[in-house]
Length: 597
Ligand SMILES: Nc1ncnc2c1ncn2[C@@H]1O[C@H](COP(=O)(O)OP(=O)(O)O)[C@@H](O)[C@H]1O
Ligand SMILES: N[C@@H](CC(=O)OP(=O)(O)O)C(=O)O
Image (cartoon, rainbow, N blue to C red; front, side, top):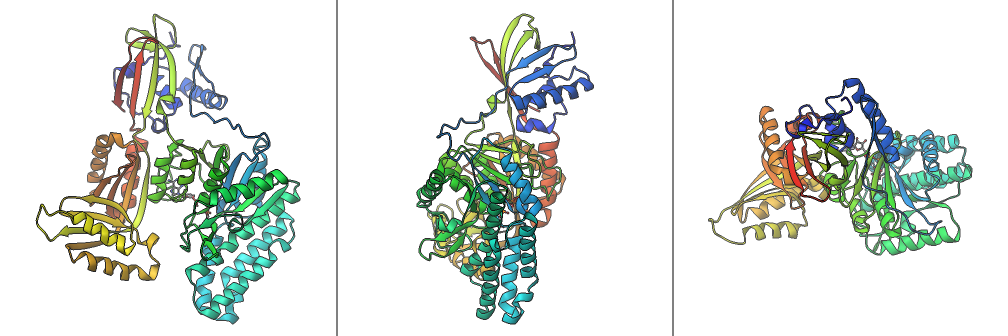
C-alpha cells in the first residue's frame, strides 16, 4: 500500500542524507524515511511540511492521499507573563540593517509588523560608519588642522547622515550638533597629533549617537512614539579598558530602573545606542569591542528580564561557516549558549564574543534573524538544545517495517538527530608558541611557571595542548595588544619564557574550531584527519576544550580556508550526522540504537 512509510533504514544504513539532518529537521528525516515514495511526492511532502511547521502541526500527505498527523515538538516559545503593557523583547539591528534611509524604513516596518511586541530597540552605527570614523581619526593625526574638513571619510559621513535625515523627512537639527562636534573633535586630534584609545572611543561613539537619533525621530514622525537613549547616560557602567571595555554588574539594575521607569511613566519605544558605555573611573565614553551592540542587546535583555533577545543581521542566522569563506554555508536552526559563545569567541564575526554571557545568566533566548529576509527562521540560541524533541512519531510495526498505518503492534519511536557538528569557525592570524622545558621529566611546577609568566604580562591564551615537559599554546594579538606593541610584547614574552624553556614562536597560524557534539569526538576526528590528509594539510596542534562543544585544530594561515571548505563539504554536504532512535511500546521496554549516516 502506497501510504506506508517504510523504515527500511532502521535495519540498513541510509545513503545520501541531506544536510538538513545536521540540524535535526524532522522534514529531512521524513524525506529520507519516505524513500519508497516517488520523487514528486517527496517534494510535495516537503512543501506541505514546511507550511505546517509554522502552525505547529505536521501533516504528512503520502502517495495514497492518506493524511497522518505527526506530533511536532520543538523548543517552545516561553510564555511571557509580565504585565500586559511591559516591554517584551530586545530587537538589535546591526550596521548593515540601518545602512541607509531605505533600510531604516524597512526596519521600522519590520518592528511594526510585530504589533504584539513592545521592544527595546538597540542600533549600531549606519553601515560602515565605525570604520570610517576610525580612518578619519587616523588621518587627522597627521593631516594638519586646516585639512580636517577635507578628510574624505568626514565628507562621506556628513553626506550619508544628512542624506538619510532628508530622505526620511526628519529635521537636520536631529544630528547637526553631532556633525559639528565630530569635526571639532577631529580638529582636536589634528592639533594634538595623537589618537589615544580614549579618544578613539569618543570618536566612534558619534556613529551610534547619530543613527539612534535619526531612527527615533523617524519613528516619531510616522506616529510611533519613541525615545532615544545614549547607553552611557542610562547606566551602562564599564571598566576603563577603552576600545574593549567590560560591562560591570551595576549596569543591570541601573539600566532596568531607567528604561522600565520611563516606560511606565510615559511609554515610548526606547531606542538605545549599541556598543557604548561609560568608564566607572574615568566617566568617559567607552566601547565594548567591535560588534559590541550584540552585548548591549543581551545586557538589556537580562537587565529587564525580557522574553527574548533578537539580533537582526544581514544573514539568515548563524551559519555553518563564514559565508565569505564558503558561500554555500547554511543556517544553523538551534544552538546552545555554550556553542554560540565558543563560536563567537573563536572568530565567527556574527556574534560578539561576550554577548552570550548575559543571555545565559538571565536564561533569555537569543534569536539571530535576517533583516533582509525576515521570514527565514534564523537561529534560536537557548540553554539546552533538546534533540530528543526534534521528532516524535507514533508508528506501527509490521515485522521489520514501521509505518503510519495500524497493522499490529503500536510503537512510539523517538528519533534524535545527534548533529555531529553545528558549525566550523576560523580564526586567522594567531601566534603559536611551542614551549619545551629545559629540565628533565618528573620536574613539577613547569606548567604553573609558564602560566604565571602569562599572568604577570596580562596576556590571555586561546588554545592549549600540554605534556609534562612541553606546552603548545596560541595567543591572539589582535585582541590583546595595540598594534604597535605586538612585536615588542612578543619578544618580551619569549624572553621571559626562555628563562625556563626552549621557545619556538610560530606566527601566521589559524585556529579551525569545530563546534558541535564533542561527545562524538572520535567520529569527528576520524573524518577530520581523513579530509586533511587528502588535502595534504598537517595539523600542528589539536585541543578539545573542557566546554565539550569545541575541538580546535591549528594549521597554517595559508591552508586554513581550503581546510574549512573541505571540512564543510564533509560534515555538512555529504550529510554526516548520527541518527539515534529509541523504540518500545508506550509502557514497555525501550531500546536505543544509533547509526552514523
Ligand atoms: N558563522 C557565521 N554565520 C553567520 N555570519 C557569519 C559567520 N561568520 C562570519 N559571518 C559574517 O558576519 C556577518 C554578520 O555580522 P555583523 O556584520 O557583525 O552583523 P551586524 O553588523 O548586522 O550586526 C555576516 O554578514 C557574515 O559575513
Ligand atoms: N558600530 C560598532 C558596533 C557594532 O555592534 O556594530 P555591528 O552591529 O554593525 O557589528 C562596530 O562596527 O563595531
